[in-house]
Length: 546
Ligand code: ADP
Image (cartoon, rainbow, N blue to C red; front, side):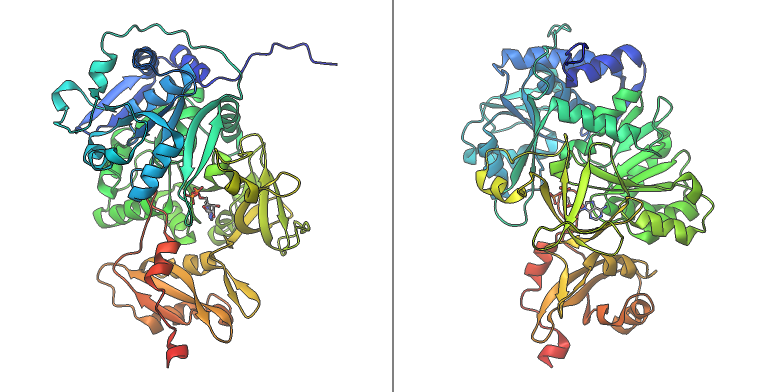
């Protein structure tokens, strides 16, 4: 027997309509690419999104057309999210720091019709335009006064494009499983692979994030996504913040510590989401300037493992609760969030950090299993670890037009292979041990590069650390620790090893420590281990060479 409830589809356009009606005066504040701060409201954002949808129609954009963006987190990018998906087109966010060949590959693979770009990326597009097959034109996200001279063909000005357009647009209702947006993962090998989200998956993901304990978002919150809107839809922030009427604060291109601190304190930011690298920069600035956060209550740290020392500094120095999140582009992206339960609040800080250093409990709608090398299920006992697989309504069922990658990504039961090695504890919390390709296989045992890195950055004179596997004739692989010192630090190899030897098993100790000025990072601030391995491909361990 079917339930007798209305079959109303879950549509992204319903989010912006709801926010405009329910929280019309709530603010959206952006640091702009042109300079200065822009502020308006959800009502304004909805109105301009409808104008943009009308403008897209005049450009000939129709349902299913891919419209690309190359842009920072700002109000105009937010409008494009809603206008494109709302009219039935597909918002394809592009990571501007992709290598040139991958960039051209995804524009052509997605068959993007138009590219919306911030001023910052106009010179880049001028260089790349010749490599694109089907792009009809470009929309430069600025006003007439700031329009640059450009060699890009059919370059339009965003503000001129929407000016004069009708403020009325009837967002169509259609099948909620229709594609809404597209984001490619920057694969370390081979071409990038596209995750094609739907209206339904986007809304279910947004609901799940909001119901996660400890999120505490409401009309009284001000949320700053440092995580870029070109990376997995800024982890869903632009979709779930409007559902609760939170103030949105967009940082634009200024992601350095001083700029973020100024914006956060100036706009009363209570919640901020980003990867560890941006928090490193922000915390270093707070330390050196002696400033404190005025309103900040919670930071979400995700995208790579959150270092304990970072979570401890947020708590002890600033009284800010750090939540640790794990997820993937293919998962919309949030899979788990780690935060304290009521009964954990009275635990000593170290015990609290033990809980938060894990990746946390799953979101509703994310099922998890760990398996051994034959695919057999492993127990959730906090001891056994193996490859982690997931399934759920906001997890991809295939890569976009990529049969080869899709064929490898799922097991016989249809679960998605995350490529992570993990433990699951009896209380349901996930503990990521490593990436399957980063784990160090030493003498038949596994060493977690992530655990070693986290211990290393706990050293007060280490700013950043990375561990990679180096081939070893006897043990197969041994860990090499690559370190960036804090400014002015003289810490040496022995100092680092002495520090680590009190904290990790003896056989985990890196065979060598190398000091560098900087480590390679991707566009989202994530450490690029593949690049680092490339950098150290001719390196031999001292015990081996000597
Ligand atoms: P990309 O696909 O470009 O690597 P993703 O954001 O999809 O970018 O990366 C997902 C991967 O990042 C996860 O599979 C995991 O290996 C790693 N990751 C994300 N969050 C965490 C975390 N909190 N702890 C450890 N690893 C994480």
